[in-house]
Length: 285
Length: 236
Image (cartoon, rainbow over the protein chains, first blue to last red):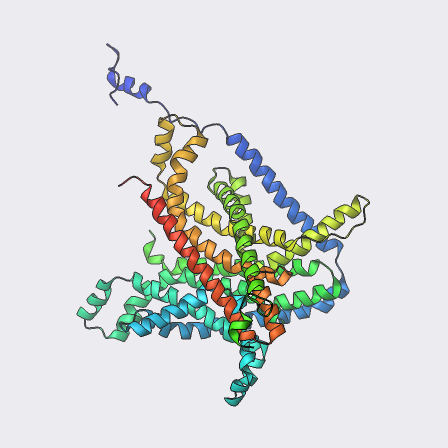
């Protein structure tokens, strides 16, 4: 836009200065936003206070003494289940991720089908398929001596969860490795590094940055998803909660569980944030 | 009985029962989608607001519904709403037993979870839109509402669509949880068939395949929508 010529006689510089129009103030609606915000925050405060009041008013020392240890053991079961499944899934995910990138059409298709199946169906249905479904093959399983394994809900849950998380982790792994450019491999080989050294010193540190957040999310998803084992009679945190509720019909049992799950997930999220800050410390200025 | 009879539509088979389960699953997911989208969009607006109280309340919402296991959220809504309504009725002097509809409980619980994740997708999409777009619309004299509708939304949808497609596929799978509170969806119907016929692997396998088919159909539809939406954009 062309500027209007300065008035004759007026010093050019100061005219320019006074012609500068300040940016328009934020349009109206600010007050409305503020009112809505305070109202919503008040609503949350009300929900929080109501929950607290409910917990205090229905405080029952006997109930607490009776169920607190059970919740603790349930929490332990949840943590064990998730930890074992994540580790087994991580081990299993490596061949699957490699299979996805394989040059052999058959291997690539098979690993793609594996990933598609486990990502495309509900974890609950997979767990049922293992726990109830494999019962259809009881004679065969007995013949190979695996029936003792698949009879237990606990082992079935670990089996189903490991297979499930392996599919997700394989995709994370593949995505992270593909995010590291080819040039990195070429440069490493030009420097005479061995394949193992390349992976360990050059590819992994870069892939880890990309993979960290998805891995953290996967662990959080597993913790949340693991609640469904309560349905196949594993007494994890959710299972203990359901048992406590069915015996007492006291709604606070669910609220305690909600608070525990929320704090675990939040702690994990903060932990991932902290690790990410450490891994990317060279990228910050 | 052989497998084809068991899965057939008729007196002997379970085909019609399972088909009704598919209908329930699909209708629950379809009913949840608009609720989750609208709520998620509103929460995303809150997150982008310059007003700190709005941002905080939006973040509290996401923290809660992303942090709770979906199954627990479902139970909280299902049992919690039941208890709350009964308390209110009792306080008003009435005496009734109220049972919450499992479909509605599922819709609200899954809708809240969907909204929590969708708000992140929308918020990310918002930040992908350059500030000049708002300034341009302002310069053209568009009102805030028309800026949103005519300028921002068409671009926002294009950016957010892949993330939202993903959330739809997750939602489709999460509907399986409502079988636990008694809604006759795919998983519950196949479960009944499995228990009656003692052919658990066949029926749960069928359930898994049905979910796969639904996911496959969704991705076909979604990629068509994505093509259409990106074709509508101006060439850059």
